[in-house]
Length: 219
Image (cartoon, rainbow, N blue to C red; front, side):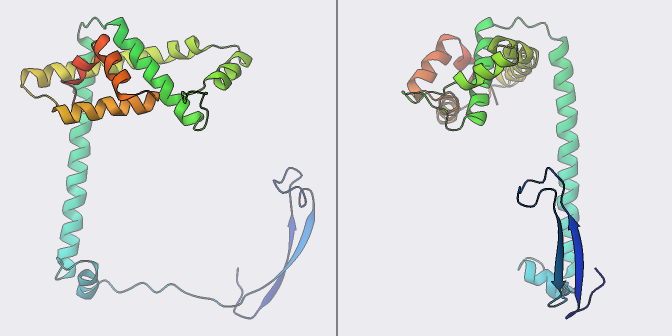
């Protein structure tokens, strides 16, 4: 602000009429400020000592620069690889003729709905601990919409997600790669927590609609 330590300045501040603090809204306030001290952040020199302070594995500044460069290059290569794989899989999923089980789509949509409720209603629980969707349904009704309208909006994305998962699952299935029981139970537990049901209830529902069979090959 162009002031030195010890200098003072008077500033006139005009607050907007809709300012969040009502006691200041629409008011003009005169402020008198005094600079107590002016400090400058000291940046350590880029040398071997700095590199050694960061980690014992660096002996010189060149070691640090080399490691940073390799990390950035590795990150960039991974992002490019992931993007390329994603594009290929999306293309395969779009062209693949897959009949999606209705139960699988409905399960995915309900899972997304429950996850949505958990985000917007972190404390919105019913008498038995289940997520209470009533406030959300009321708000949707005010907007002239319904839960089904929302699910219909999500349906295309949900179907694409499942179709992609099925393509990947088929690929890893042919390679003989499956999730271990411990990993499978972990996925079931995540679904149970998202829907606020017991592990057994989630596993029973996922077995009934063959979603559990699908998860065995889902990486």
